Image (cartoon, rainbow, N blue to C red; front, side):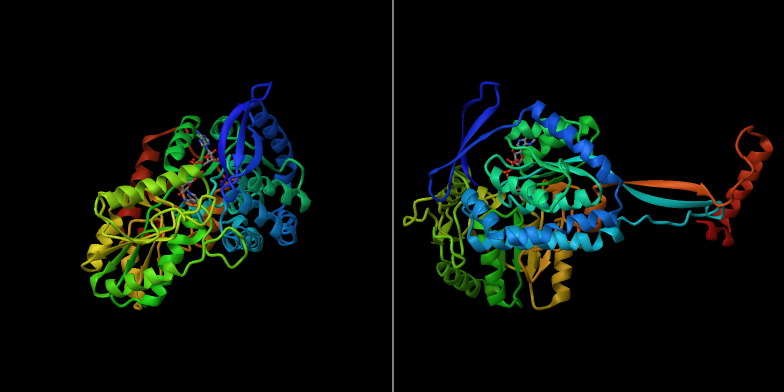
Length: 513
Ligand code: NAD
């Protein structure tokens, strides 16, 4: 992410932020933050676009949305360039996380939207089933607001947007103030794909702009970001009775069992900890290795991290990029220093890369850590492999669950069923067995956090339907039927009593449960 500072206001009072590249530490430009009036104007345009868009069939929407695919492929290098310039992430991270994943999201939801949003006809239960039919219709919400962070500035914008518009909504996206141009690409690709004007708009700005979006007339907020901001937004949504999803931070644990394939586990640990410079909500931040394989694991982890290539040329052959902004660097350095002061050991790295000018933190391996240290409690988001020796799997599970967060996690064992059994004891929104946390990219799996990691689930059928309102339409089987109801009578009550006795005390009555 770009580093930013507030410089002044425009004559009409809009806040202006100056951005600096984390790669070159040179100025990237300025952004003018949208104010409440700008958000309202964007809302009005979106509302008008949504009327016509929401009236289209899902098939028509799919035909329009899948035109994003060639546009994404044609613009992939340009989008990657923007993401790299604003974030400093490694080029391959940008290609895979932002472009491959975006295309995968578009194709997944386009292929399945009609199925997921098709009206359903569940059977009414009991006596009602004899007389009533039900249709469930998945109707658009209207204009929805999407607010995103800086660590996946394009994918975290396009993935929810694709779902929202396929469900018939218009979208106002507020990207992070430090990755505005990556966010702006969303509007550009939608325009190039021929989606209606106003359907997908990007509102550039900071937290105050985001707050204005939350307080605007949008019908839902899909938020991805930190716990503190999520709490503020959820409070506002609560007051407005506005639905919201909260995809928040994580402190994912990895458990390495004695029977794990150690080479595979070490590779998973390094990529899980260092991918995207460690700025991954489901990044591996704590690794619990049972003592039987601890030494072997640690030795290979040190070797693997030492072999990582960190550079500022941004060819596809660099493994780890820059820390995206100076505030994150301060958190990473602060936590490492505090841990070391309290007895932690740094085996590799543990400091900024002295050979590079930008915000580069060396890929690091640390041990001798405990849960009193901030690095084991709070999000670190750095390229740091934190390894802890545990007696056995039970201790590893207890340590994994000893966290305020509950986003994802991973378990490594060659016994798949054992891996699943351990996964089920981890109190998180999802768990991977023998892989780093892949949950966000496996669309069929609902994604969301427990504890402080969030509220609600996104992605897949659940996520797509989350951008719609399920309206049941209940009607009578018979075209005309005798009215029941008033006037009430003792005779009517006696009949009900007999019916109740029949349903809830007899075996045949169970048929009506
Ligand atoms: P952040 O909470 O500081 O900002 C996120 C977004 O919220 C930005 O666009 C920001 O401008 C906006 N914002 C800030 N204050 C606001 C307010 N009062 N009202 C409305 N909007 C406001 O988070 P960040 O530092 O950009 O992102 C990093 C965090 O995101 C990490 O905690 C990371 O774990 C989390 N994250 C979670 C997921 C997930 O899916 N669970 C994915 C990626 C990142």
